[in-house]
Length: 584
Ligand code: UTP
Ligand code: MG
Image 1 (tube, protein in one colour):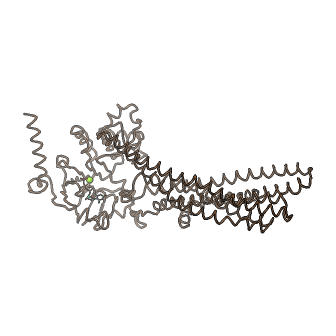
Image 2: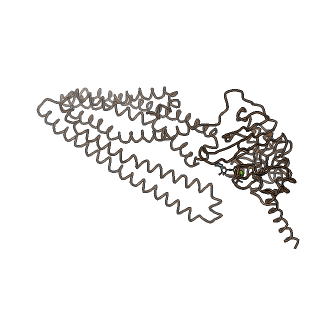
């Protein structure tokens, strides 16, 4: 029950629905047991005594009781549903909110498909149990208890004899549960794989098509789909066997009942109507036991789902606002690293080691180095996407951890190698970081990002809705919208991480122009592979294996006889070769 205890804060506020639902459930169950008693009354006291005048009253009474049961059932079901729906509404919102605030570190190890299925299927699993599972379980228990009491009231010996077979039913239920539980887990796992397959395929459709691996993908899907089918078939086989077997066992108990009961009636120690009532009551005990497997299953599924949800809900935020002095104001833009070391995992090697530098407001810092050298890592420490393992990151002389996360991220803008655009209007994509921006500000940002002109050529201009992942725009156009988005926020610090590497030379020129606009008056960090992009920087930091190898201005570094000079020569020679091949 630990799981449901931990989730209590989500469903307990709605306990009034639950309590209402339960109260009416007790009423319904009581009425259910009245049926056989009316039957007994009709047979023993009316039919056999030939009191025909009673029949209209009995009929009217019966209809009346049924009407009450109908209303009670309605309230029971509706309130049960409300209980589940409200609880899950709250739960799902909390999950989504949690996902927004989980650190990058969490996403490093999480799979999209898996998180999606937690937010959908697992939440539904919990809802189903809250709405129906609880109720069913309680209904079974109440039904069995009341039925046994009424049966004992009619005849204790017959009750004992009839219930003798029930332990066998319980054994089958137990065995069934053992078999069907792993089978269901198999289905869920297999469905998860199927989901991941589809999700990755759609996200990676460009790669699939450009390498013409459509058939491979189809085959792969066929495999997962086939696996899912097999899982379902085997579960279906277990299910199909279960009910007939249970009914057969139940009927054995009925045979015992009819044999011994018939004997009692003939002997005169029991009325015929009582035997008929007994027959109905026995099924009120058998069916709950039969269905117990189902409910147990629902419970264990809901429990498993609840555990998966708790894993997300209880995941460590790791990076949180401090409770004490927090700087809310926007920063001016001085960035200083003091002996910063970063390790992504406890036992991994240092991604950054002993990094120190200082950037004054408005300065441009270039970061260069081979792939994996740690360039991106440096920038991610400024926004506290990750925390340094050692050393300090200061902005305007104050530790980044003393700023509120919001203030920090409002002050630092990013333009990445590939920017994500949402499937909404261009206008909303540009003002994403500052939703209150006016149309004039949006247009101004677009103009400065060299995007205004092509946006106007689109069918609906600024109101054009983009397809998923910015489909329908070229790489360069997407990039310029991302730059406009960064300008719109008006950050004091801007980070350009490989912002021009995904586009061709010609577009690069356009983007360079846009970037020059962005950089005006802001502390800028440019990460680039091409020296041409950062040779005007106030300081260039050359990284290798997470350490600073060289630093200085371009003119100094090209004479330094180090890594930078080598990169420069390679790129410069390339350029010369191209040039000479064009000019002949
Ligand atoms: P970076 O991501 O900082 O490298 O990773 P980079 O210089 O920007 O590289 P490119 O040019 O974009 O390719 C630095 C080191 O940190 C590790 C990487 O494996 C790399 O060795 N790393 C990075 C992690 O362990 N986990 C991460 O989430 C990111
Ligand atoms: Mg990088």
